[in-house]
Image (cartoon, rainbow, N blue to C red):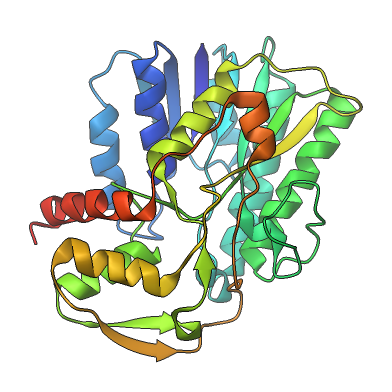
Amino acid sequence: MRILLTGAAGFIGSHTALALMARGHDIVGLDSINSYYDPALKHARLARLSGNSAFRFAHVDIADAEALSSAVRGEHFDAILHLAAQAGVRYALQDPASYTRSNLVGHQNILELARHMKGLGHLVYASSSSVYGNDTAAPYSEDARADRPVSYYGATKRAGELLSYSYAGLFGLKQTGLRFFTVYGTWGRPDMAYWLFTDAILRGRALPLFGGGKLRRDFTWIDDIVAGIVAVLETPYAATEGAPHRVYNLGNSHPEEAITLVRAIEEATGKQAIIHYTDGPPGDVIETYADVTKASRDFGYAPTTSLAEGIPRFVSWFREYHKV
């Protein structure tokens, strides 16, 4: 397949690009390489992709409709994998407009691009466990209501799902939304707890731990997420009743408390954490817990990596990347 991949310099995007190319697919990758976190990390991820004849990169902001259209004009794609977004729950307290621009305007631009693209078979896009909020019974099922997100990030991701459903119904655009649950791993994001905690522990600094360390997250290793994405892309789109739009959870289906994450990092680093217990900012959910029954049934999705296995791998990479 020939695949248009947005967010190619991102954590999940760069890992997925490597996996898809290893399976014989061609990738055109787009990314704005914004400064939400250090662009040097994004360039380093891109460096892992460059030099492969199956990969071409274009520096594009998906919120700029004209630039987006120009970057792919005359190109043919079998599928679009749309992973670009303004990420992070807490940054929305500082700059909510960046989420509106990337996650709503940018998402709609991708939808509009896709509906005019001849021969396109499938649009797969990233959603988030943040759409569920705090009112959903665990484990979270895709059939549960998702209309009370506690973060603006979650609200924009749910809005993106609704935009996609509308385009599917109006224009017959085949789409699959993937709700990711707390993805972690090598080449990850510096704003995530596992990165921040590892950095603090290795450098002997205090780390803030919200909610008494009792907040629970369905930590999902990057390779398990990538395997799910690849399976969705490579499985022919099955006919559905009504609009050709569906949503799947991709998680580990095994939530752990934040204090368990800290203890795993302590074990992997051989150092003790200096913990500062504190109240978290608005927007944090109490728990995330994926019901992956549908993804397992339809795509054979089966996460295999526990937090105890994944964290040592991440810490080893982190030491090497930062020379700590």
